[in-house]
Image (cartoon, rainbow, N blue to C red; front, side):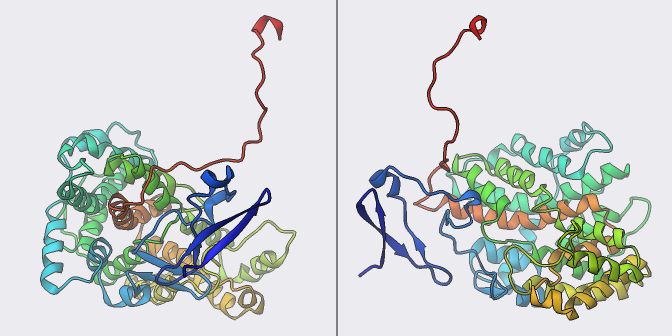
Length: 427
């Protein structure tokens, strides 16, 4: 017999089925709650509400677990490539060598953007934030690629998915180039997905750009670690926009807009700003003391995580990567010395260990991206670039879900009750 949850309201008993996933908490199916009782649930932020069924990503924050299609994120980041993870998220299984080669080839053939988009970029102010540019340009893609906006056609959905994954690095690099006044570089399909992005970002037409293998590997890992993260704010935004039947380019643009918020995609920038504020390793004890002081508003950014109540599984990989990048680039900067010393102190200090305030992926990624040469204004753009595959996979899953309905959250109304209109001369 299926387990049921019993709710008593106004003296009436109501039973609601309890659903179980393959792993994780059970959920109470309350879809008939309003029809049977006339009442809604109240859950600000939807933190106790499952809005969908998904086979993509599983997180256990208490145990520090992150799985993509069942595979631990650490194993993927150490042994896989971003293209392989993209295939996995889109198709459900890891590709064979032939499937990966064909998929990578397909993505590489979609990396160029319509030539008129270059004119579109020039409509922005030179000092526009790259995320503002990215929101506008990605939203405008539907005006250029009419042949892949029919969400009911599986072939068009696949083409749109490939286009978004392929063109995002080109758009991100163009946003950076435009902000620094350098010419756009066309993609080079002989390079890897990540190597091509680095060349389009930091290369110039006047000389040959050599991709640094250590930097390429680090960026590929960063992309893998940010590829998907379950039903977070931006992913839920993509699904909500998609539930109305909006085209895929508009849905991903909505996700980018949500990601721009500092509480979501700006955490690594905040962590780097904190390191700038600390300045040198000698000042760390002062800021550690401030972090422990309940009356001081200062907080250590990049430590702890809203979801992960234990160690962030993505941070384990990044801890190793940050040292590889520093060694490859021969980094000599007090900022990076401060980061490594702060990490060492936090991992050994009883206060932080007891509260499980371990360095998270944002702490390490901000430091690495800065060492590579990205300005902080590009950090969230890189996050969006990596997360695009997750958004696209979630959007595809939503489109084919028979239980999917247009999103329509309810509310607890606390405003005035009905009242009569008073003409302006009588007020």
